[in-house]
Length: 105
Image (cartoon, rainbow, N blue to C red):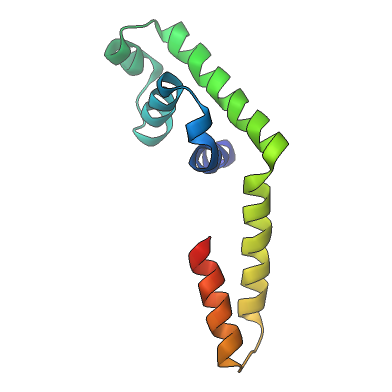
């Protein structure tokens, strides 16, 4: 389950850096929950070809994250915002800024 969540977040950040075919396969596999065989049938490629494409796309997503760290920064910012929200703050300006930052994530 953890890998699924990780891939979906990474896909949100880096999908445009994948080829269109890789994007299509990741969407079908992770978001539409199709099997390798079903994807292969739709795209007229072998099940092994789909598997290889999924693994290459996953590798590229992890590679991009390792270099750019956008998801890591997002998680860190989100965690800091959560901590700020948990504080007993009565200042409406601060609460408004927290809300604005949250809406930008």
